[in-house]
Image 1 (cartoon, rainbow, N blue to C red):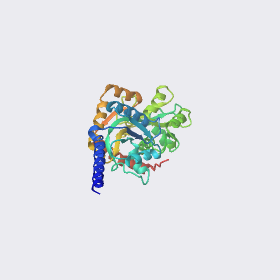
Image 2 (spheres, helix red, strand yellow; image 1 turned 180 degrees about the vertical axis):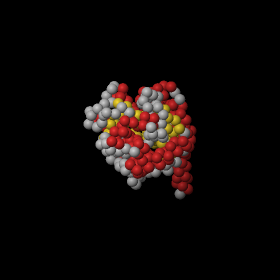
Image 3 (cartoon, rainbow, N blue to C red; image 1 turned 90 degrees about the vertical axis):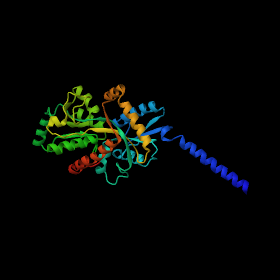
Image 4 (tube, rainbow, N blue to C red; image 1 turned 30 degrees about the vertical axis):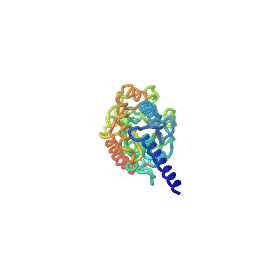
Amino acid sequence: MKLRAGAGCFCVGLIGWLCSLAASAQTPANYPARTVRVVVGFAPGGGTDVIARFFAQKLGESFGQSFIVENRAGAGGNIGAEYVAKAAPDGYTLMMAIASLAINVTLYRNLAYDPVKDFTPVGTVAITPNCFVVHPSLPVKSLRELIALAKAKPGEISYASAGSGTPVHLSVELFQLMAHIKLLHVPYNGSGPSTVAVLGGQVPMLATTLPAGLPHVRAGKLRMLGITSAERTALAPEFPTVAEAAGLPGYEAGVWYGFLAPAGTPAAVVNRLNAESERLLQQREVRERLAALGFDPYRHTQVEFADIIKSDIVKWGKVVRESGAKAD
């Protein structure tokens, strides 16, 4: 009896020691000690996927561990967001979030996660503006001319987007509310099909991301009317913002990209990821590559990122309610 009890105590002690040793191997000071997953709530090939893969590669090089991108597409990014919200808060599951995270709070009913309470902001890394472009057959050369035509023909001028409830769709809804006009929305399943429709002349106007629309503008196939950033972007400084081109002070509808971790992730892990992201964004090579991909570096601290999410929930919630926008 005593011998068995002693052996049992030894086994329990050994197991405890091994567990302690395993835990110490993955303490924040040693993070990351294994592969880190970066979840993208959209299909491969889109802007979120591109920026996530770029930073996954750079972070992997920095830390000497694999950062792999895992696409969990669907429901406007909600499937991926819910997955990360419920993941273990250990720093080994992250999400590349975009502005739709704030939009979806109002756009979708009964979300299975809270974008404020269920995540720990790590920091933003990039931003890309949207843009409004038109087919050359539409007789307007400026946003002021578009507004005048839309007022003369309310609800008759159609525009294509990547889908209902997407950031590009909401950027036009905000524009309409501020300009007091009504356009006809034609949603497509992604930026590719919507761009093809406008290039082919089936729809006269397109709302899309700058990286998707700019090549067609510079090729002379589409006409640029305005870019949705608050200030002119270094990516295409020759084109005016919507605010200046349309005479709408305060208009802004850029798409930010940033890392989120599950709520409760150790501060030491979050701080390490934040610091390394900041270091990467200061590198000329990284900034030039981002520009080539169509993104501007966009750096905010964890606290600032949290405030951006909260303010965007209010901003886009108002646009969704007043415009009556619905999800696909």
